[in-house]
Image (cartoon, rainbow, N blue to C red):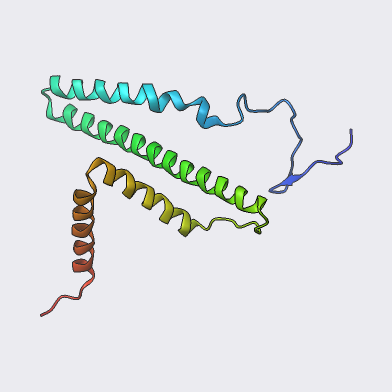
Length: 152
């Protein structure tokens, strides 16, 4: 057996393993049920347990767990919005390339701006944009106050 066609990773020889393939090409599809069923169900269970709980220590532990679950759900929702924005942009870019435009890759900053614009649109539709912007202004004002030198 020869070693031709075998790459080196970190000084070690890598032997290709053709049987090592993903069951589905996109693992996020395989675990989508977590974000649509399992985690929301667990959030409901934790909230119910918090209502029943009388021990302060246990209640605090449940609050931390609930916070972590909600952060996970929000991160997944944000990732879905980012993926949707990227899909829309790629469709636009493919159409432009088909008409003769040169290939252009989206910069990270431009992608962030597009995601933020999409979030603003959804907040505006839900009527929550004013509250969001007020909270954002308050947070930025607090940052500015921290950065200002103290007058003596």
